[in-house]
Image 1 (spheres, rainbow, N blue to C red):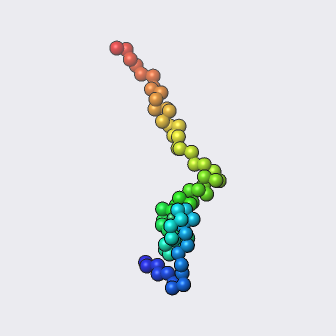
Image 2 (image 1 turned 90 degrees about the vertical axis):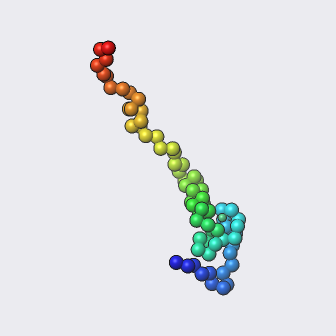
Image 3 (image 1 turned 30 degrees about the horizontal axis):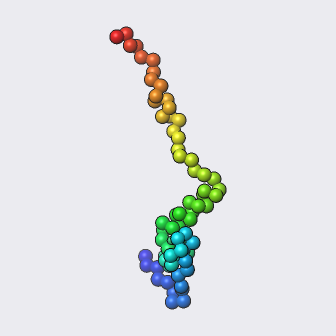
Length: 69
Ligand SMILES: [Zn+2]
């Protein structure tokens, strides 16, 4: 799939980094900047905390074993 910009299309500065936007990723210059911008939205809304798996804590608790040695 080739995105060909119309002749009257002019790249605008990427909202993320300021480079000329790529037509296929407009208004961003790249997919990376698109994702970065999306990430900024998430930061403003709600932060995504590092996933803390509570199951890991259970592994540290060893079951009562029969240690008659
Ligand atoms: Zn960019």
